[in-house]
Amino acid sequence: MLKILIADDQALMRDGLQTILQLEHDIEVIATAENGEEACRLVAIHDPDLVLMDIRMPVMNGIEAVKKLREESPHTKVLVLTTFDEDEYIIEALASGAAGFLLKDIPTEKLLQAIRDASQGELMLPSSIAVKLAAKLASPSPAAGKFPSSRSRERTMDLKFTNREMSIIALMVEGRTNKEIAQLLFMSEGTVKNYISSIYDKIGTNDRTQAVIWLKDMTII
Image (cartoon, rainbow, N blue to C red; front, side, top):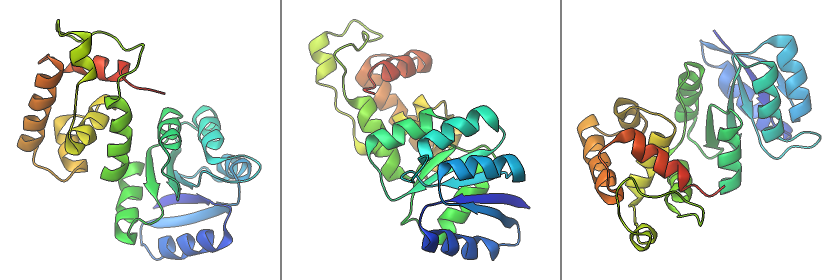
């Protein structure tokens, strides 16, 4: 039985999520909170497996709550569920230790699967969010490092990745294997390998470690 805590400042959203989750045979909502501070206090009391965390809440927002829970209850997974998909929210939530970033318009069946997968340690990112995150990675920074090869700075600035490549880049930087990327993006492993080969060709390396290091260096945060 998965023990879930819901943190959202809107009573209607809290109640609706609780009703949906309680219908599942393997999920139990053990508490609800209306802000991040209350969520952290209730986590200490109830020790849930996973917290569904909104971002914009009074007293303490969801990002600060994720950071606090990572320190105080590192075994509790936090899945961000919000209306807002601004780049800074996505990056800060994941950097703070969130197990995923979902939008509230997600279909019920996908939300339920995301909760189950996140509780097992999977990183949950819808393709639309992965694309937004990867767009950051694909944007060259003035302080960016050199290419793994001897390509010029001018060539670096001319790099262009497709939306699908950017989705894959985001997951590569998170340390995902080809098999995991294929599962998260609903692709075959062979197709993922083909896309990664294209990415390698564009940045001038066939070494995954070098590629990931360079892609991280290109991130604007």
